[in-house]
Length: 483
Image 1: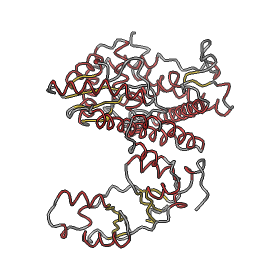
Image 2: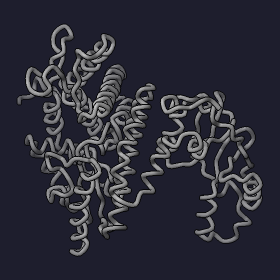
Image 3: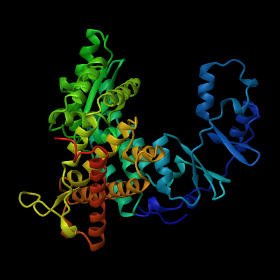
Image 4: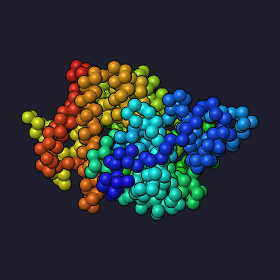
């Protein structure tokens, strides 16, 4: 095994670590015989192979669930009857970081390792990873899920930042990094909700859901930002359950702040009664925002449209997303109004590629990556996706859907994707650097402190934001339609 330190951990190849042979069985084998093979080899999962093709996997958890369901005579069942066919595979020459991300994202404990010809070569488990690096992302997730107090939870934020710093320094894929951050943030918030339930008897009742919005709803946070959240509940929720909703809403905001998640300056949080409604009230409210696009309503809708259920009844997510798609489709003036708001944000790039920086104040000499570029890209993509009938997912997900639907030219999408990815990476790098200097992370960057190559790439990314604005102006005829 190679010598492994924190800086090199993420970019070790899978085949350097994976020495566990793949124990296999055919799909027609009886479950009793399969269990015998697993016992003999002391394994918790077995790979199902038909001919030379890997077709499934069975774990001890699958067997446990089968027994708990009481299906009758288990002796008559075969491996094919219970195997999971949705295999998550990784190539032997992939980096370890990808293995960590896949396990964390899919909440699984093993990966099927294949070669370049997709032939089975072995199995990698989370135990293999824990054995060599206890500060890995998987270990951090395990730590989050084991803490029992809010105080303990608040201490884990720095560990997450340290882990991200190592990954960024080794040029890890930015999309995977951002999604991993979202996974950490989700795990932290869900554990906090669990602690509130166990220690303070504060919980969200059934028939309600806690929504995360904005960048957290899109699973695109860099370092944790302000709280953007809401609560939705069924129209017929009894009064005593509604009181539980309000107690939960008030407490979760305070608890999140105590573990390092600042309150939203605009008060767009579940603890604000204006962001805590029944399903029909939310439908009425969002329709008002759509049909009466005042400056405030435009801001509110922009945050709310990227909703995601983090805790509670997940059916609300689909119901609200479907409502937003249907309502905006009925109000065609909505799209040019939103497009005009997005295009009014000026990209900080002047003639001959000159950076337009702040002239005074604390951020003098710097430009805002979020306001000057990321805002137009994320909101623009979300607007186009909404018109195409797509709601939810990351900005990368939405761009992929737009590509599949041929909704936007492939060339424009490539430019927009490259711009978005670079700006997200630069934003994360600068925020981590600020934290390492014990400074508050921000969205600002000083172009004069960048290398010539970085300056060129930043110019190209900002031009990509201008591509988005031009696309919106042309698609919605903003230069023709009266203000």
